[in-house]
Image 1 (cartoon, rainbow, N blue to C red):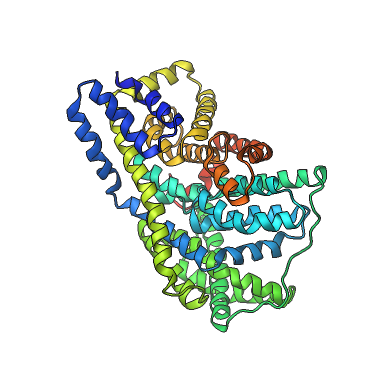
Image 2: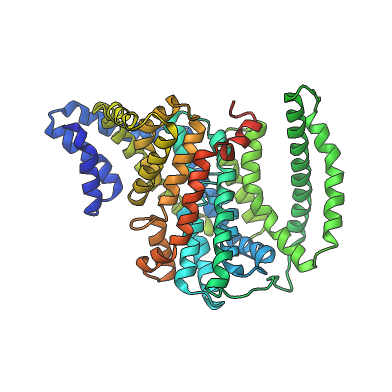
Length: 498
């Protein structure tokens, strides 16, 4: 009888019941009919237990950090920076939209936040520059799925919580796939530029740029620290690679960093002479916001703090930047920003709690064992099974949000593919990227509705325009699936995956 929990859940979704209530009512109803009243108490007790988790505290903190950055005028700075870098390309504003999503992903980790924040700015701008509104909305929706792939990522925190994986390993594994999705979307724009006569563009550098002395000084210091850190990191990776082939190299990290610091200064001073003053200021204005993902990943990699602590550090950094460096927020803005972040976080955490309760019935029904037997009965070839699972996840992503889908399907599918030799972190990325792309997939992709609300264009119209972009995202999913090195190289080089 309990095996019917999933069809009943899907029926509730189809008649328009909110996901939170469907996740609780479907199993609760079947337990009542089956005479398992004691398990109903367990079901609803797990609603709280599912939210009562230290790793999950990272979610509301990352949401708050993203809201603070957005309220502090960060979106405009990222768009200006993207325009200065890529505005001169054919179909320039479409490229700007995609690059802005890549940069914004490091701040919010949310596809919905990306669509609403960047869409409200870029969709009208693209329309004024000759793009159709549905094309602008489609580009915005398609590129927004990069948000949950590039760290910090809310769905990867959920996956790590459910499956007991390292959050840091998942964050690092998502970097290359996220960038690969962005590059793929840019290639589609370039191919469409001539066919659809997309507007020609020129490098957009707004003249008369101004920056405060404090912000300029902060950017001056951060740029040198970041470049020196990057050079030191490359040197450390080379030393590690030499050690693996039998050439030991002794490396003192801080000493190497100090050696590269003056080199970084000289390189930046040389680069400064090749660009205009307005271009330099636009770049400087983007430095402080873009430091957020560097602080998060850098702190985790060095071992200074855990991912949950990193999320709290991100909020503190966002407050300092918004109030004291950029001075784009006042105390009056804070209550509304915190309230908005609290409501967004509460929505996610309630669904997580309900999904954990739902998972209780999954285990009681022995669905994982039945599903494992069914999947393994289809084929013994892991490559074929991965292809079939990608199709399944893609269909699930059309109808179900990524968070609940991960909590429900992760414990069922993860162990099956681990036994077949797929690394747990690799499967986590396959699942996360697949379900994230589902957010932009017709008919029920959430970001399609957000893009429709922001642009005023019908969902059906956006769904037709987004198909070429979805095609390249599907190609990227299969590349990630069959070439594990795409996602696993960085975690292995940094020692988070053996």
